[in-house]
Each structure stands twice: as C-alpha cells, then as structure tokens.
Image (cartoon, rainbow, N blue to C red):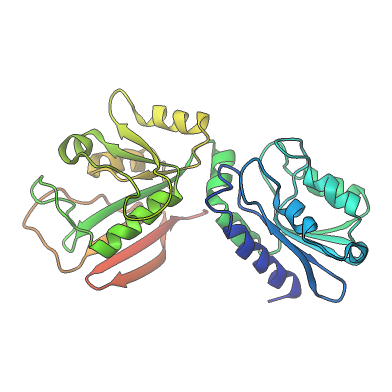
Length: 308
C-alpha cells in the first residue's frame, strides 16, 4: 500500500462514520497531513445539511501554519457549488494547501470535475483515482442514483436447501433468530423496501427494523396500482437511493426481467427441506459472488452485478 493509499484508507474509515446521518448526501472522509507525515486534521460528513468532511477536517487543525505544505486527502471530489453549504473547493483554495488527493470524481451533475478543476486552477497539485474502486463502492447507492437515475436495488430472498421459498404456498420461517437480525440490519441501512401484493396479503409483513436499531425503510407494495415504474419514480422524487426487493417469486422475477437489480442476497437454510412449494428465482447470469458466510445451518450469499 502506498502512502497516498494509506491516508485514503483512513478517509474511508472516517466516511463510514456518517452512514446514518449523511443520507441522501454521500459518505465522505477527509484527512489533512503535514509535510512530515503527521495527521493534523480529520473530519467526515456527519449529517445532511451540515458541514462537509473538508470543513470539519480544517476545523480540527490546531497548527494552521503547517497547511501551506500540507496535503488534503478526501474520498470524494470536493464540491464546487453552493448547496446547503458553501463550496469545499473554495475553502481548500483559501487555506492554501500544497496538494490535494481525491479518491474518486463526483458524478453528481453539479460537481462532475468542477471541484478538481477549480483547485488546479489555483495552482494546487491534484492527484485523483487513489483507491477509486473502494471509494465508489462505499457510495454505490449515491452513484447509482445519480448515474442511472434510479435507486440501488438489492434483491433478497430466503430459501430451503432444495430451493423453495414457501411450503406448498404457505408461509415458511426460513431465517434463524440471528439471520433475521441481519435482515433487519440491512433494512436499517437502505432507504426503501418493496414486497409483492401476494406476500403483503398473505403474510402482512411489517418490514421494519424492530430487531435492529435505525429508521424503518419506506414501504412499497408492488401491484397493478403501484407498478415498478411508479415505485422507481417515487424513489427518484423522494431521493430514496436504495431499494430492497423482499417479495415473493413474482415480485423478484419482475425486477429481474426488467433488468433492475445491482445486488442479490440469498439465505439458504441448509437443514430445511420441503416436499413442494414455490421455487426461488433463478440467479441472473451477470452476477458474481461477492461474499459467502455460514451461521450454523444458515448460509448467506451476496452477489454483485458485473460492472458494479
């Protein structure tokens, strides 16, 4: 790992601290390093509408005379527009640092390289693309929302060892208490959730985070009155940047057929089998395994779409 990568990795650590408060803004971390390699300032974006990571990092600096030879590391391109806060690119220029290292370019239309351009025009050296893949992955919801104009979509289902999601049409408890808690953790991390009308009518799922902490996702039911296009449009209007599809086979297949998915999470109860029932959907062909974990008799597989 290079020196730039090491400090950028610290930016990513800091950025994750703003996971809950920064939405719908991206998670961003910033580190200020003196010429002798000492970290003299750190910050992250704590809450939407409040100071950005760079502002908080500069505010933490106790020896401002060191800034003229310092390097600012930031996981996402500094903003160059007036939103709820002033442009961070202008702040960096005013502070007169020697160098800026950026993890990835912000593809949000109001930025898109303008922050980097403004800093370079001021004569400050700028390096980009350090741990770029990691920086983009951290804010995959934000980038998907602004680049594809839809939420980041996670398909999720639980199945028996022989591939059924119910028992001859009857509801089936596949998850264990532990993995059920993981499901609620996932819900707390995402903005919205959708089930099919059959699942809603048959099981009346609460779709809450009652076994975890955090806010409940926005609830949708897929139906003739609320089709996929309508749900996606509502997510755009309400800046809901991620959506879990937790419905039955019909709802899940509808999203797969429409090409609307980025991630798939499958829980398999390896000790549970049924004679017949509804088959789990087929995993799309363009998915690659990202992670596989076993918890007693439960296995959770996480797949990511190629190119994501």
